[in-house]
Length: 112
Image (tube, rainbow, N blue to C red; front, side, top):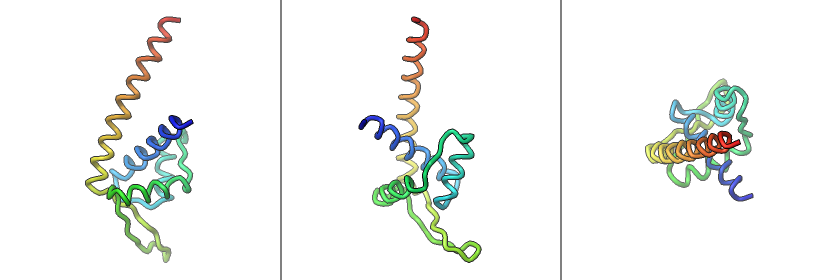
């Protein structure tokens, strides 16, 4: 279903951007942060992240840099100003839709 795919994609984008508003992170760190912050209710497969990173990079929302940590090279992702603006737009739209859905569900449950 295209709507489901768009909803999931938008949610993943929102979640990734929201985590990056706090600090620069590498891929696995983002996956763990999302899982921890959601109390295990939201999992983000690592393979899902990389297409999002590519799209964000192409649009100028994020940049990346490499850093050696414990003799291992890690690629960190940094949220750019353009990405912060996009995050705010996604968040506003998400909250508006969530509130609308809550109103619908409340109205349906009241009529039962």
